Image (cartoon, rainbow, N blue to C red; front, side, top):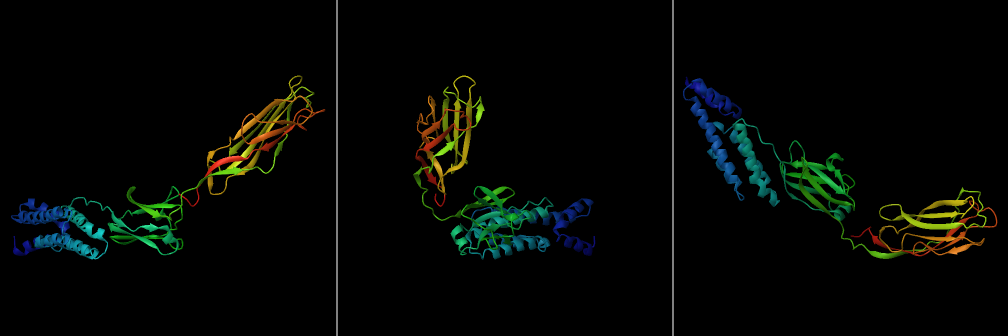
Amino acid sequence: MSRHQLLILQQSVLLVSGLSLLLALSGCGIPGIGRQISSATDKTVAVLDNAIGDLAAANADWERILNRALEDLPDEVQSTVGFEVSRTLNRAISASGSEVKCIIDFLHDRAREDLIRIKAEVLDQPIPPLTPVLCEVESVDFALVQDGRQSSIVFFGYNFDVTNPVEVILIEGGQEVNVNQQKQTLFVLTHYRMELILGSNNGLPLSPASQSLSVRWQDQVMSEIPIKQPVLPTCEITTWKFVPSNEVSYRPPKTEGDGDFGGHGPNVRVFVKLHPRDLAGSDWDLEIFMRARETESDWTTASGSQFIEHFMQIPKGYVVNKVITPLENEGVYTDDNHEDDTIFPTSLGPANHFVVIGDTDGGEAGTQTQVTVFFNTLEFEIRQIDNCR
């Protein structure tokens, strides 16, 4: 083999992608070439392995380790592998100028990750994927965002420029909002920094219900950042009394018979009950039921119920914590005259007493038979839910 041919083969070693090809040529019977190439590759891998191992130490001096690796790499790979190691070193030096301590603490990890990838390229092996690492995040104060004193938060770490981006999820009122899918508010500034713009004008709007920011990558939670809300007073628990302003009358329809009780009773049952319209107990309907049924003959009956919507509403900003006055009560009796009858309930509840028109001196079912409910003062224990904790 001529000296010129040997020089060409030695220069080809400078290309990382050519190493594996030249190793293959070593089996073609050309004396000495396989040993030279294997030696350069082996030495390169050995230098990288030493640096990778040294960088694994918690307090590794990454700058010294990378400079030593550059010095120890064979001359044949200085323009290829050496260039990649040098780029790792320069990027780390640039990042180390940051005042954020966490970046400095993690630089040896990032440099080690780069060397592992460089080694994989040298050996023509699959290159390990980059994984973003978050090491420090600024806090979020809702009050500062509201008055414009905090317009963004910065995330510090490395590998933020991965193909699959880091996601930020706003947790608000128990719901999740993917910030990445909103208007553009999250920016990757460098390999080591991201910034999230805050505020209702050109950033991510926050509210008193905003609880936290969840930083995730490929569905894995990297960090949870609480959103500081103003310190609120303890939620008040107090007794609240509701006094219905007027009595309520209800006349049920005739459902059976000729409409005339004819002095045969009727047997009467009157009933009232409060029904919550929501789980918080902030709004209530009132049900009034009456049934008057003749005791013999054709069993004339007047029966039915009426709902009064929004009969009672708890003060805004509160929910019912405990019911003190029972929500229902009833009265029962048998009418034996043509007079209005005052009936008292069998238990404590919304009704204080009932005034009932049962039998009269003519036809009455569906036309005159009715009940008028007079109410008690209703008591509830209520709990404050707005602007408190």
